[in-house]
Image (cartoon, rainbow, N blue to C red; front, side, top):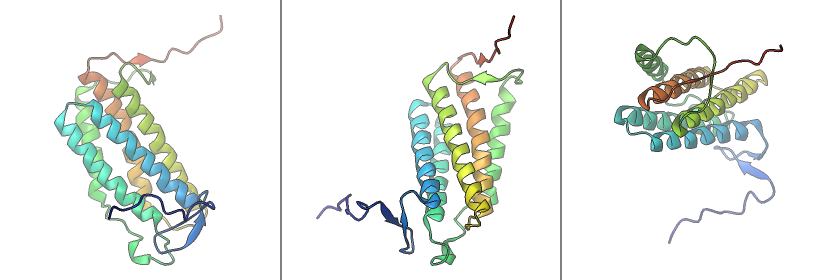
Length: 188
């Protein structure tokens, strides 16, 4: 028999964390991993627009890390202390830094703020960057509310948003799409 996607247990606005604790669907922990899930979906969309196999492979790896992060955020740390630390390593952050540096090697120096746009993959990478920053802010808010969150999760999301910004520029470079400089309107 096929697995049913609906359980009807959330019809009253509650859901369960890993560990069984029931919380409102508006709980910050639900918001955190829901935002990470949204980010993961946008990263899949970026990948679908690309033909560069190396970048697509890295994006799949990032998606795997985001599932790990989401699982960590979905845990009730009081009931599942062994799951507090996701299978996330400092090496995952370092990989993002290496990729940022490698892409920056071929990109022109930034001399202005740039507007998202010019190619659908560029715009989607910028959307993913914004969602990533939101996920990071929610996780920092959790930390400030003294809810357990592994500090490496925040560090990874911070570096991932940097990666996504540079990736947007890199995609534009690969697609030979000029960057759109922000030219502030001046009164005059």
